[in-house]
Image (cartoon, rainbow, N blue to C red; front, side, top):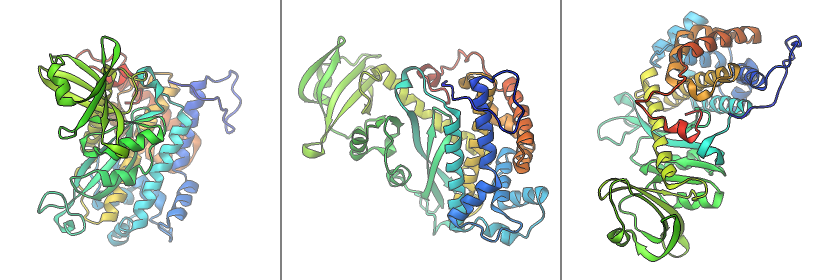
Length: 450
């Protein structure tokens, strides 16, 4: 884990000893978390998005804290449960105006901007870097989609891909460097994820490896990655025709005369455990793109193919196969979200409210993962030793203390709360040695946040 620069607190007396770099970075993360939920930042985001202009009782900050608390205590994000939490923490309000605060386009945009601000603040202050085989990448991001059911009355505005049902489609991005759910976008549920991908990731980031499933498979994505200096890794569709121009054989690269993949396999061994490392061309003329194709025979004559832009000097063929297995981390994250707040279904059919509440849940999830980062830095513990799901269970037990500290806007109160939660995380969520019964692919490749 990279260490950030030292920074002394202006609000605290000068310590007798110079703090460690990790302690200073932890303090920076701690302060950025509190600042992200401060009235000043919330008012700035509210003004930018045009949300909640009246600012009487049901303010943007109070709504955000309400959704965060509902997520942390494991409540389903229904208006009844949210209103009950709001009434206990602030004051009783009428149902109609409370719901209307979520049922507007500005609400969805406000919560999305709040998520972006929180993620960018934590990432900038934490100074985490990838290690091991993945250290050559700026980040590794897993992008995937998941469905979300809504009540039948939303069938007209949110038609699901299943006939007669109503639902939305979410495409989300997850960083295995930090362990944060960084971004997400919602649309009417369809079988294709590419349209939402283009909205979520309008341009690829240089040096980042994107690990995707077959729902995102298209040639233009690989072309864009090559032009941007980014990298893409995904499975090869069985109906895609590529031409083999060379292969790695006995640690030496051998050129081949534009063979089809089927012809190449006629003479190549396909015994169980065989690794293939090929250079291929996909497309013809100006649309052709040169890529790398890695295969692994998990059974005799049963080969899984992985198409990528990652060169051999960055990852070996075996590391490519292992890197693709990282994609399952986002599936585990979806399961975590659905088990925590019943993310798989929404209790409202209003499209704006669906987005606002889901972005609010993502904010709460990022808060928990950020407390995990803060604890690792403050306690000088490797981040990968703190199990993410166990951290969520700890945050759930201390939900009221966390939200009370955020609502107070006091650095001293927030520092006491983070110390309390951090101590519980160290005692409960720390895994000093990974279990031998389950191999940690993320840890072996250097993905500390996964």
